[in-house]
Image (cartoon, rainbow, N blue to C red; front, top):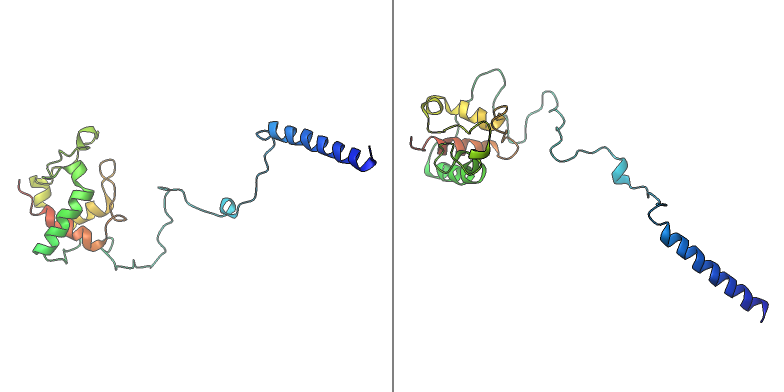
Length: 167
């Protein structure tokens, strides 16, 4: 046998041995590749967002000015607004408050702090701006804020629809 043939056989046998060793130690020896996504600052879903910069105004305009009381409803309660509010209410509110707004939604039975009855006198006697503020900022321990889910106009449409619910 020539020297070259012996060298190739030894190299092949060595390659097989190294391959078997790597195969059985795959889970033990891992090379962690550098990923630029891992080393950059980021936010996980539902992590607290950064605070709004001072003296900034949202893209859709200021919904209300803090410290000046509840805002006035700038959206007339016409058919278009009420219908849009009904559709938005069905998607965002009816699961907890129920289709009729009485706080008897499908999820409402499983919530520790029961959803408010939107047809009650306490809700009906409040101003549109007060209802808008609750929709926007939520109620601690009772209702999540919907200011990131609904635009300002959509929140006013929901307010206009809530005003049409019958007690």
